[in-house]
Amino acid sequence: MTKPTFTACGKNKLILVAGAGGFIGGALVRYLKDKGFTRIRAVDRKPLPEWYQRIAGVECLSLDLSKEASCTRAVEDAVEVYNLAADMGGMGFIERFRVMCLRSILINTHLLEAAYRAGVERYFYASSACAYNTKLQDDPHCRALKETDAYPAYAERGYGWEKLMSEMFCQEYTAERGMRTAIARFHNVYGPWGTWDGGREKAPAAMCRKVIEAREKGLDTLEIWGDGSQGRSFMYIDDCVLGIDKIMHCNELVATPINLGTSEMISINELATLAEELGGVKLKREFVLDAPKGVAGRNSDNTMIKRVLNWEPSIPIREGLKTTYQWIEGQYRDRKAGRKTVKDLL
Image (cartoon, rainbow, N blue to C red; front, side, top):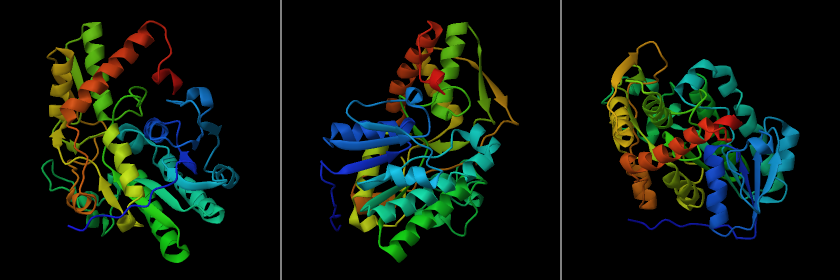
């Protein structure tokens, strides 16, 4: 196996994290700060009091990156740009607000051009497994998706097509203009400091919240969208930010989309059982068959990431969900007691 080569950024160079007021962006800012980077600019459209996390010693700006002028301001003096800014959420949000998801292409379009003009050395784009051909995902037990499975293109409507087109923009800025871009296709990221209520939350957080609500309110049912057979892999946030770092600085992955997710596939019913075990309850399943449920099955084929990086996301869902459940439980009780929570910021 050829050892990958990495080009690291100097600790005193300016790094921009776009979408830093959200779940993954906020976690990435904390990760970079903990690694000793001294000049981090965090940008998000939300007003500063509404950010999920704000890290001490970080320059925080409230800017709408769908606007060209905001992107020009955001990239000033930056050496690296991490683009995690997008309108997105769980399947309910993605299926209901397709136009809003599609409009996120404006962010990447303007930010790429601004980064190029500013002389940015490396640019990271957070793509998604929603970019994959949906015809390969019509069975709960379908094979894991390889990077080549994005073509022939048949992405999820709205969000998936925006991701696929934005990947292409990144690749062409490398091919035509020489800017080093990195592209990671995220597979269902979850963990503490994420959305857990209000319609944008993803399945792990939603399942934890529903179990907590049932236990706190004395309910005996658990609502599940679809029949629960849908298969997914879920990646814990710590694996995600470490993977972003590795992919961004790997010279063999320039302008090359790569999966970033675990290969541990479970069904939504199995996810519900794990949440019930954490809550110490057993609930009746109430299946909502006409609710948004996405593709039947999706898993990450990690052959490429293991070959190139000699690493893959590996935190088991049982371990990550325990930490996530405990955090959401604290959030739920804080809200019940009248204290401000992440959910109240949305």
